[in-house]
Length: 229
Ligand SMILES: O=C(O)CCC(=O)C(=O)O
Image 1: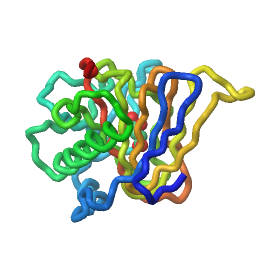
Image 2: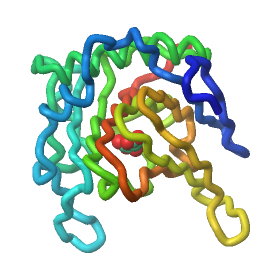
Image 3: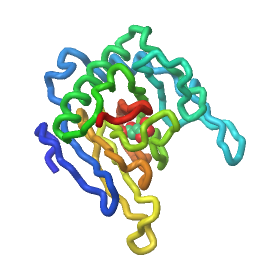
């Protein structure tokens, strides 16, 4: 799989309704901005994001820095019921500006290339999770993006900046031998992936790795609303 062209590749997950597609964010998008530097400065400290583990009741600090950006005025939004810091649309730091530019790109390019029959509402309606992995010790464990507030059949787009990291997608039930079927990807600087309609039967993660520098990802989620007919 080439990582330098802007061609969009589709990797089907079988059997199932969905697929994963990959492309590259062209240089002209945010060309005058050092996204890593700009965003790192504005990310909240990791101690700002603490979850309560549902099974044990223990408080856990997430192994990365994280913020949720609301692209709409929806003050009721709850990200996984947690205390993740949230940035509202009316805030105006670089973080919001960069997110809006990326949202415009994924909305127009990916929707068109993948021929997704979606309302073009990412910029106005979507929710974006920004993760900063400071080094290879930072990670995100297997999960599906299936919060109640997002449309489970709509695509989830991720744009990556910085250090290359592994990205695993694992089937929830199908096995090869004794292991769940898994698709392995490398997410490089400016890679854009779309996970289309796979959240109901897969989970994904960014595993810990040795000797890695910082990486930032923007994950775009479409709020629950009907797809365009
Ligand atoms: O950093 C990534 O590429 C994945 C992020 C992710 O899975 C999430 O925010 O739910």
